[in-house]
Length: 408
Image (cartoon, rainbow, N blue to C red):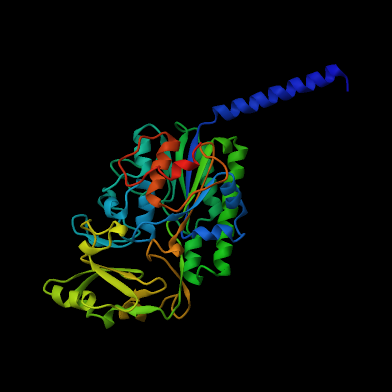
């Protein structure tokens, strides 16, 4: 090869590199918050999720402590508001508040009043001119403080992981309005299989692998669009998962006549209030002596480490089951259930139990590579999102003290 030919090739190679760098500079920054429901922190090291492991090695990872109670809706709202359930208002997967509705709150409740005690990150971002999208997230179907995400869809559990990723990528491709600066992405299959078969099952490992494949699709889609190197991907879970033997059930009817209480929730966390005139009887049954496999408190006496009990939506008595035990009722036991008679998995237990720890991974232009953070509380995710997305955050219970160690 002549010197002239070599110089020519080097010149054009330089142009191509400069053009590539220029394209990367023009690509707007994007933050994607991924939730893998029920993905326990130690699942990451099972060998089923090479894409997630690579993202962790190229960024930061940690085991994250959920808030109390360690169930889905309270913790998803904590992650997106930075306020613990006692302050964000979503104090359980089910709850009562006559000022909002005569009906019990469930995971399908869309009345804005249920969600009005805290502002999700997408509301704050949009008010500051940062366009937001939500590929499923508790509260994303509701107009909160007069704002919805610019793009959102109604929750559909049958929608495949690949389709969820493709929807997010399609939103990025849309020329309708300013570019999206923040998006959520949610997967529920790991939690579902964990409940059905238990955390040590082959089914959970297969579910984790399927989500990992969907995340691989996301990474490749971002790369194809020249967006990967300008996108911060933050992967979280709402809680972990513990084995739940089929025989480990405490029947509440054996402790008290349930006609005397207004039962709000049962399971790992049991919440109820005595009906009028029944306070002494109910308190004697649950508070006067130790109970098998559960500990109960008046709402004002819940241990301070749980940061729980001041919200008026918290019932008068709250009971926490020993890890691996559930409460139920005779009426519930009489109903057919796909989980009856077989071992499975559950969460909702003490957030300080390592089995409840959730995964945390953060990779992108804002993060150093190869960072292992100590265990931190999930309220800290919110100020991290604000920092990397350039949003002035609302007041929250979170802190950057630990997670900022991962930032460049």
